[in-house]
Amino acid sequence: QVDLVESGGGLVQPGGSLTLSCSASGVRTEFLILSWYRQALGKQRELVATSSTSGYDYYPDSVKGRFTAPRDNAKNIIYLVMNNLKPEDSAVYYCNAIDSGGRESWGQGTQVTVSS
Image 1 (cartoon, rainbow, N blue to C red):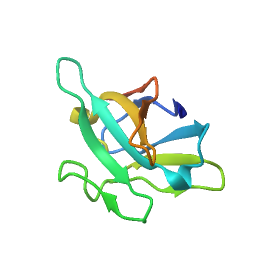
Image 2: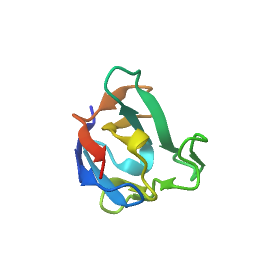
Image 3: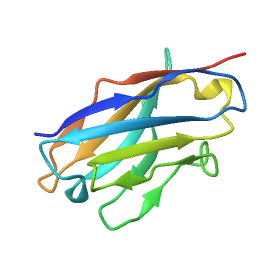
Image 4: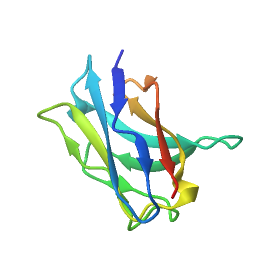
């Protein structure tokens, strides 16, 4: 079982930047597929970034070029670096981990609000 704790959410103005952190415990991150999802009020949860164990990253078009998800396996952390934020990026952001056995874990989420 992987325990995930997100941090770094908050209020930011449009065009601004914010970095979220997800700290994992229980399993080394180098053995995990790590992803970030978000869920806006009244909408379905959507994928915003995936970092595989082989170094392959995936970003949907909605965030490509603005978001990156670097991982620091030495610290057992994955980040979500968000630039040029838009009001439509406002959501609760969740960290997700899948281990080598296919077991899935979620963090508790952190709120990001983009507003002037």
